[in-house]
Image (cartoon, rainbow, N blue to C red; front, side, top):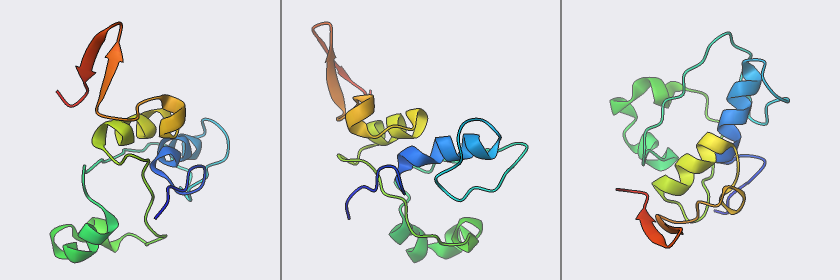
Length: 111
């Protein structure tokens, strides 16, 4: 499955949530208008895993299924969190791996 940037990727979550709160342009994802919102992130919980263990997360499993959101490439926590927070795909926000160099020092974003 290829990332669906601009349509159904993790990068569309925050802008759509903000739009539902009245901030920013129209949402890409179908999020109903709201006065307040909370975003729950469960790292590693994909659509297949949720279906397989629906009894362990009955509320999440009961939500209408519009199909899974895609994640960026590479699909790592670091890349996904940056996409979620910025509303941008990996090639735009620049976090494309778990380690990177800043002023000559290699940083590991997972530590």
